[in-house]
Image 1 (tube, rainbow, N blue to C red):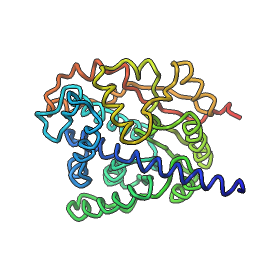
Image 2 (image 1 turned 45 degrees about the vertical axis):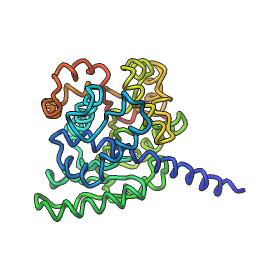
Image 3 (image 1 turned 90 degrees about the horizontal axis):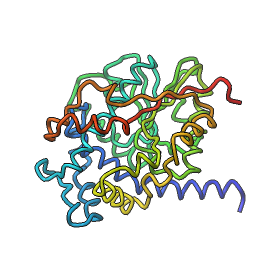
Image 4 (image 1 turned 30 degrees about the horizontal axis):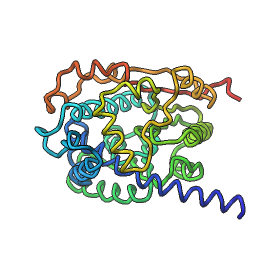
Length: 318
C-alpha cells in the first residue's frame, strides 16, 4: 500500500470517528436554548436536540437519567451546563470583537450559528463555518429555514464549508474565500477534548500553517484543560462524561494536559504566544442562570476552570 493510500485510509477512519461525536453538537444546542444566544432556540428545535440528551441518558445510571427536555426535571448538576455553554460561546464572541478582525474561520462549528449572527451584525465580517459533511448538509438546510423566517440581515458574508479540522488541504480550501492581506482569526469551541495527543498536535500545526498564509492572525479557543481541572468535578458530572464517551466512542478529556506547564509547553512548541482570560470576565450577562433557577455564584465558583486562550503566532518560532 502506498503512503498516499495509507493517508487516505487514515482520514476515512478519522471521518467516521468524528461523525460519531456529532451528537455532542446537538447536546450543546439543547443546553444553549436556555440562553439569549441568537437562534439558539430555533437550532435546538430544528435538530431535535432533546433526542441527543435522551440517547446519552441511556448510558447513565438511574440517578443520572434525569437529563430531560423539561426544565423542572433537570438536575442541578445538569443545569449548570446551561450557563457554562452560554459563557463559553459569549466569551469567544467577545474576543473575536476585541481582535478587530474582519475574517473568521471556525473549526468543527457544529450547530452553532455564531457566524451567521455575527456576519449579519457586521457588514464587513466574512465568516466561514466548517464541519463534516453530515452536519454541513443539515446546517445548510437550517440556515435556509431561518433565512426564510427572519429578514434581519444578509447571509452573503456567511459561508458553510466541508472540512475536517485535521485535514490541512480541506482547511486551505475553506480559507480560499478570505483575503490574504488581512488578519484571520481561527476559532474552535468544544473540539479539543475529543482529540488524541497526536490529533491535538496535528490541529495546532494546521492552524499555524493556515495563519502563516495571512498578514496577521490569531487562534482563539476555550478548549484547553489540565487533569487537575478535569478531575475536580462532582461524581454525577463524571458519570455524564462517561455517558458521552459511551455514545461517541471517544474518551472525553482523556488526553488533558498533565499540568499547566505541559499546556504552556504545547502552545509554545507549536509556535504560539498566548494569553488566557477568565470567560466570566468577558461576559457581563448570563441569561440562562435565571431561566434555569440558578444563583450567580454557580458560575463564579467555576471561574477558575472557565478559561479561554488568545494565541498569536510567535515571531521567534522557526
